[in-house]
Length: 355
Length: 177
Image 1 (cartoon, one colour):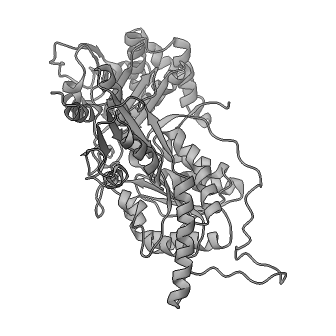
Image 2 (cartoon, each protein chain N blue to C red):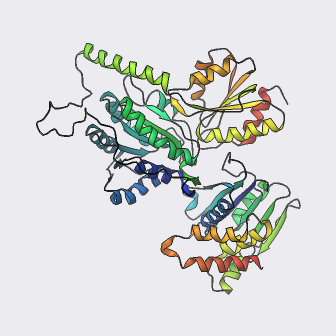
Image 3 (cartoon, each protein chain N blue to C red):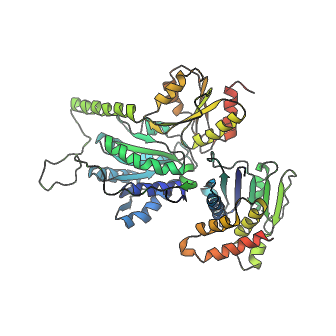
C-alpha cells in the first residue's frame, strides 16, 4: 500500500481524476471548490493535459461538451450556483449521450446563498439538473478517501453508459484534510469510443454528436432507449453502505457530510443501549432503494430517520423506497450549518420513545 | 488514548492552520485516525481563523469540533468566543503575551504561556504558534516526540526546508516553558 498522506478533499479528488486518465479540465472558480481548479492548473501542464479557466460556467460546460464529443476523458468542477449556470449544457450533454464528470462541492443556497457546507442540491443533482427527461449518475463521497475512490468509478460508469456523472460533495469534504492513499495512475487503457467525433481520415462514415431531434417520434424513441439504459443502471449500480443495521430498530439514512455526523450519533445511541443503525447511500441516483426497502421489510426496523444538511430533499426518496411500510422522520440543518452528533442523537432518542 | 478534539483559534496569519496540520500529521505518524477542518471564508480576512483537529483510534465522525478537549487561544476574540465550549475537565492554552484576560471557568485546566514574547526574545518572530504546540505536546502527550518532529517535517514544504529547524527550535522552547 502506498503512503497515507494528508490532503484536502478538493485536491485529493483532482489528483485522483488525473490518475484516472482525465487530461481535460474546464472550469470557473467558486468557493468552496476552488482548490480543485487551482490544483488542476498546476498539475495538468505537467501531464500534458489541458487546464482552461473559461470566462464563465456557461462557457466551461460547453467546452466540456466539445471535449466529451471528441471522446476524451473530461471534467469540470463547481459549487452550487455554478451548477445552476451549467444546467443547460448538462442537459445538452445528456441529450447527446456523452460521458463527462461534474463535481459539485455544495454550499448553502438558494441564490448566491453562502459558502459554508450544504446538501441542498440533492433535488438538482438527482431530479432536475436541466430541462428534459434525463438522469445523471450521482455519487456521494463521505470521506477524503472516498473523494478519491469514487472518481475513477465515476469516469468508468459514464463511459459504460454514455452519460454524465456527478460527484456530489460539499464544502466540508472539499476543505477538510484526512489521510488518503492515492491510486496508481492507469495506463493508456481508456475504453474505445467508436461514436466520438474525433476525425476519421476518410476511413469511415463520420460520427454525429447532437441533441436536436425535430421529429417527435425520433426524439421519443431516443429518450425511451435512454430510459432502458437508466433501468439497467437502477438494477445494477445501486450502492449503499450499511452500518450496524442488522438488528437496528431506528435506521438513520444520511449521505456525505451528514452521514459522518449521523455515524457518531449512532455510536452514541448504541453506547446508551438504543439499537440504531445507518444506511449511507453512495449512489444518490440510482437511489439505493433495494437496501432501504430491505430494511423497511425487516421486522426489527421500527422507524427511519433521514438526516440532511437541507430542509428535506433525499427524505422524499427514502419515503418512496419505504413506501409506507414504516414511519420516516426527518432532521435537517441548512444554510451552511452542520448538524452536531448530539442533535442527531436527540432525534434518535425521541424516535425510540425515550426522553 | 481517548479521542482528542482540538480547536485552534487566532488571527489569520498567526499560523493556526499550519499548527493544526503539524498536529494532524503527528497523529497520523502515531498511527491514529485524524481529521483537519479549517474555517474558511470572509472571517479569515482580518478576523479570526480557526481549525478543528480530531485524533482518534476510530474513524472520525464529524470533523467539526464543537466541544473541544483542548482549546488553543491565540487572541482575545478566540478565547471569548470558545471558552464556554470546552468540555469540563478540558484544557485551555492561552498566549498570555497577547491576551490579558484570565480564563473564568474553574472546571477546566488553563495553561498560560507568553508565546509571542518568547518567540520575539529567541529571534523566532512568527513562531509563537509552534511554541504553543510544544506546550500543548508537553501538557497532553498526544504523540511521541519522534512523531511530533516527523509531523513538522511532513508539514514544512520541501521548498522551505530550512524552516524545519526553526520550527523544531520553537517547539522545544514551548516544551521547556
